[in-house]
Image (tube, rainbow, N blue to C red; front, top):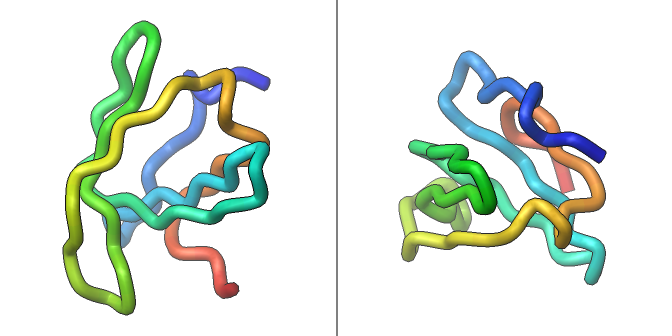
Length: 67
């Protein structure tokens, strides 16, 4: 899967489902050549920064995906 064409939603959020089953909602996402980084959104509040590799991503969607 290529995440290079995933757009951040109009709300500035990106939902990423990892191969492990973990689902992250990120804000202020920056996509680099080998990894992506963003601020985790937990219960609607900003959390710690998260960086991950594209190989770990199962699905990425613009916006906040309901749990």
